[in-house]
Length: 213
Image (tube, rainbow, N blue to C red; front, side, top):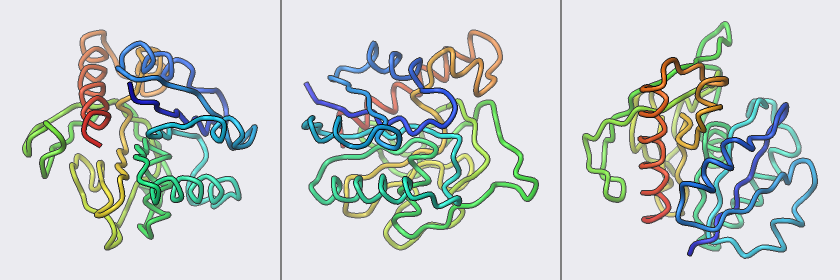
């Protein structure tokens, strides 16, 4: 069973609901970490096979010291062939580390919430090119321009899912890890059928990443 370190760079409330959702749904051994608050000892005491970096109310453009420390830690793990899945903030953080442009979606800095359908532009594990999946989302920044190191995998908005050309990094702007609580209270997804759909599609994506990358 793969060992996955979940990094939660939260600012207001920890993503415990999402972590518990992943624990119950993924065929992996998951551990929970807050390096920006309590340091990296909990990560150094583990030997994870891969990392999932969750969202945050902090914006990548703030360029905080802990942003740089986290991206440097993850770059080192990638160089040692440990896979990293960046979600929302994690997606933007690592895209910026790979010299992509990240900024606000709109001049008024309004946050997008709800759901978005993304279409795969290439095969992703067993997800064939042309597949459409629907994800929950809540974000006000996005990857605006890719660097030569990165490739777009799928889009609803540009660069919704990306990967590194040579290192085992995958980034996704929406929230495939979203628990029912997160979908309803953070992303403001309305109606039980839609909540169930985005959770189903989200877990399908995360499981494919887990199995393939």
